Image (cartoon, rainbow, N blue to C red; front, side, top):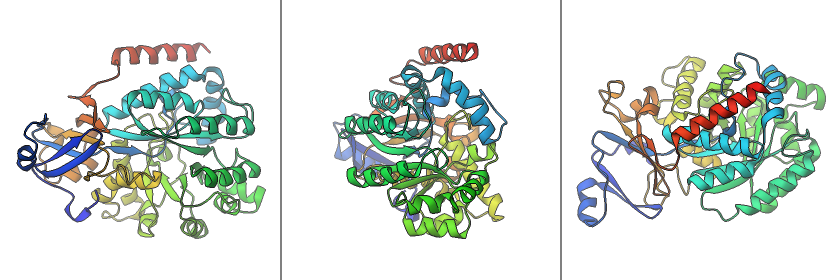
Length: 424
């Protein structure tokens, strides 16, 4: 994905030593160069960079299907928040994170971004399972099972950040929930601390028309203008959703250098609106893709999300050539890495980068015939064809089977939580 003019290399192989890619060349050349190395031969497979899920609430996999077909605020206030009040704990988040990581691995995701309560539980699950992640610790004013007020969220979140400061797999970031749940004082403090400790900021922004109109009524300006005025927006800021953008909002975004995470499937399901991704990409904005949580999307498959993004953009713009297969797949890989600020480590198959790689088996009716590998990855059922996954050179999925996770135990745990939540 580094070279879009020559993105498909036929009959090539990748050499890996420890956690990094050390060779990319025709397969016979690498076999001759490393005759003693063990090798995996995958006939009729596509090797690709691991997908990067740039926004989600991983533990909410345990709330999948709990409340469907409601608009965002009704969905949150009358269904999700009450359920969370009854069930969210360290154990719930840890179990839900493991469940979500398993789902993402089987669908080819090697890096995910998480914003949820008990970020220490999600970080612990990701590190234990060898999953690359950006863990955004939540900041908001209302109480939850994890904290009673903003001060406690800051204290606990910064402690998580300190704990994982030197982790090779886990980065941490501030996760202010949204403009309507975070005060000016907290936003200003986040802006200051993020600069001091060199930390990203990940925030839901311009998700619905109601959010924008309420901000104009309360603050006399759009949410993005308010955050910019408070110093929150910069090149380290990741704005999520961005479905309500007029020319003023887009100009603020461009001037600030902030990036965007597009969550098309969740936005469609909640009828929140459309992010103008084609326009943003043309303007040079860094754009990645996110599934959002399984409670508002029902799947953590980024392949499903990137297909949705490509198709939705064509309909939105009235032009079939908008967000083509290469652009869409780049958003799910190198584009996501750029948003997270880790494109020097992952997001493309390149010598020197981390060996975060997936293999897609094309030997099925749904994947044949192959005229364009990129087309197969974007427009077919590629998630179901992921056969192998490597993160930092370690095998996480082999022959479509999880290597480090007991699937039967995972499903039993999910059913246990379902029964507990129903009873509450």
